[in-house]
Image (cartoon, rainbow, N blue to C red; front, side):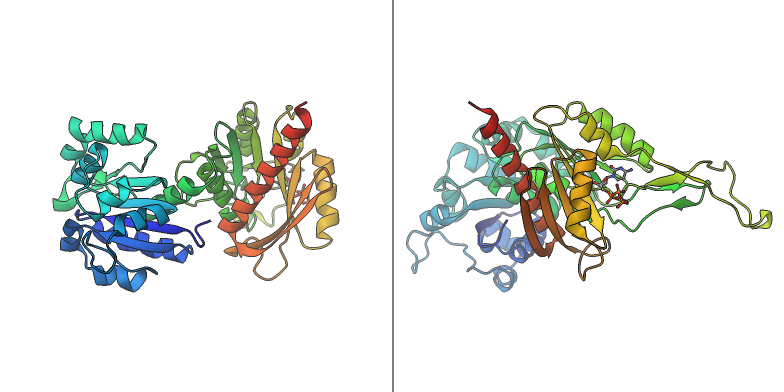
Length: 402
Ligand code: CTP
């Protein structure tokens, strides 16, 4: 989503300026053209050379640049998005009051692009009413604020004021650029492989990493969705996503069915176990008791239950991990389980499926349409899957609107 987008990265004079280097690198890795703009204060903490080495565009520090007499309007007008990380109390004050104090504030005032501001400062400063009022003013004007986190601050103090993590900042930049086409919608996404207990230490599981489901939750949140991720994976929670941890198919079933009552979209990306032991031993099975016979029973099929209780206007998306006859098996699942879309992948293909960072899928619709999404990162696949969900919902709305 950031490929080819022009990002102005404003850096102001706080100790967290060193983390802006990582933000710059991540934005560049995502394909953005990054123009760093450093204030005099920032230059006391980090060197322009560091950013020059990483960014695709020249680093700027001066409003009075002889070679480019109006850099602020050129930067402001050319930007697809501006992100300020870290933003000091002074930057917040200057920006909120419209004071064009240097190249960065002049650029902020000269732009119509979305702006993401990531404050970082000591807790006392962050909590000061003047700072909070400036933040409220900026929010009211539509500026995206990435709140500082709690943690260790410069000087060893603990409290709120630490710059948000680079991945949260980059996610906010993506969200600021994304079409808010899931705004007002409740989205439930499942992820990971469920674990079915045999005894207190052993379980039946599968190879799912949960990465694709977590990426879908993140993509939906970036598009403005109110997202709950029901996950059996130990991965980090994507920014802006509510998380429910589960272990077994039954726990996932209970959570998802309860959430589905008010959900507009449910995406079943989890690899749910199909069978579980009939008896879960209360004590660890001992070798001395011989080879155990484990009798299995089916788990509830969550996707099928969602399909059977689907409300008008609700969109149900399933996944199909196959090793042969991908499209035929996936279409069969789609019909059997009453889903609207099924995302099928051939997990035996190179670079595809459970243990990879990449995936390659075919999205099949109940209405017969079929879209191939070529090999890409799971994040990119997630965004394309959300595109398909949005396209389907838009076409349904069109069909049902007289
Ligand atoms: N699924 C589910 N509940 C289950 C099993 C699967 O909700 N108990 C969902 C998965 O989350 C996925 C879809 O059903 O969205 C297809 O899962 P998959 O394992 O590919 O299909 P199965 O129905 O288990 O069929 P099979 O294992 O025979 O391929």
